[in-house]
Length: 290
Ligand SMILES: [Zn+2]
Image (tube, rainbow, N blue to C red; front, side, top):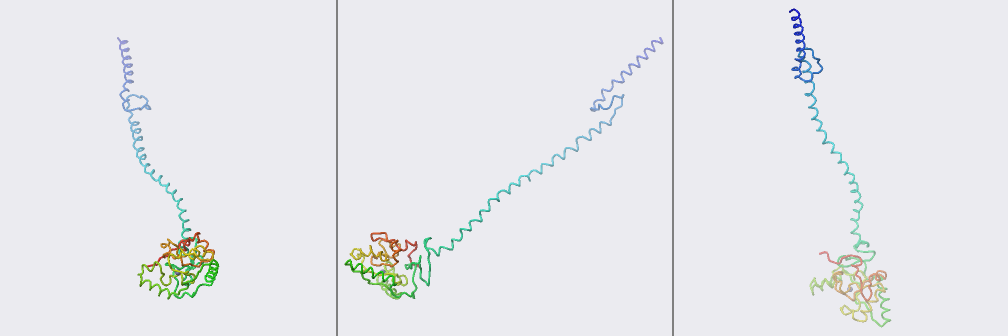
């Protein structure tokens, strides 16, 4: 019986020791505490706390702040446009011409006003826009106009034609007397179409002559036809051509010739008794200011 007890006791010890190693399973619920070797029933609570508290909490917050730094990156592109501004400084070079207009007529001609008298390219101009002062010193035909007239008259005479002056130089005061007489008779509007106001008559310049007759059909006479086609050879032009009233300011006057010199006369002559007016040639107007 003693042997049986002893065997039983040994079996009991073995059984108990075997059972003591198995209870470890429930402990594994707390996590992956593999570091702690199975040492019986000890719970080993410490490792759990250290692992859980050090991991998550602190690392998340810092991640959300950086995004605020991105916007500033798009600003730089503003520096490109300024490169196109420099060209603006070049135009000032074209501003200068603004001071020239008063000096030129049509761009290629030069106007000068000397002692109240207007000259374009050296040619004295008198019309409804440009006038002569009452005290303009010329008191007769100029020597050039007079000599040209006499030469022309002699050549015409050799051809059997009579060319004679019926009116040439006229003073400012004579013109005023004549003009006022026409205004009294026909009214100013009508008078202005065929008679110049004092200071605006070419006759005051000593460069104009009325030939033979102041009848409109003078251009049908042998002298009238000859004058229109030959006066240019002596430096004269028919100053108020037919159909140019809106340009010259005066009705057609086949008898009124103006001395401009042979060179300019040739430029103004179109042939067949036709002429370009001084207004057209120099690009100027002929109209009273009022
Ligand atoms: Zn005249």
